[in-house]
Image (cartoon, rainbow, N blue to C red):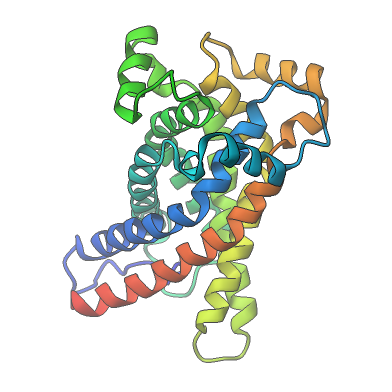
Length: 293
């Protein structure tokens, strides 16, 4: 269904397909966030730590965090990204559907991979404006100590008081560096993978969707991870720094490896999270497609 466009002459009301995409995206994002958030916390901690110790274990870091502050530390800052993921995935799938129709609305056959990638990249650019303020608060909550912010709301208020309204778009440039090519890779990898796994079968199976979703998550996270590292540094540093200055700083301190710190937990979380996300999306989309006939 992701490689189809809504026909202009469709008898269904104009709001039907965007609404279905929005609902399916929000529910799938909600489910995926609970799966991935603990390892996302570890990822941000590893990205922003100052030590040069290359042997620092991701799993050792998890154990240390839990031992010092309890299991709840892995879900610190969850409300904002949970809300953000629901909004992000809802807007992403709805935007993706609308961009497909705007670019290729006259096509009756399935879209080609490059067309899926193009629509994905445009969608990623648009969603970056929604995602940047949400991820700023998430990252600040994940790297802070208990004493700095009481809760997510306190983090929002303190960030605004110290840095003004513009703080919520701090990191927009590296977010776009990640989201435009990353979302293009995400949708196109899912498209190619699900077609491959389906093979000659008449319809794709649940396992096809799960496997394709897992691969799309790896493609999105592994290929454009350096941009995510730069974004985390920009958003968690108290001073205003240009993205290119952060790139030079990371490279001078840690070399190329510095851009890939935290990659292991990121890839590990991407596999189940995106498998859950795409499986949930397909199931919920099919449910509402029939329910809103």
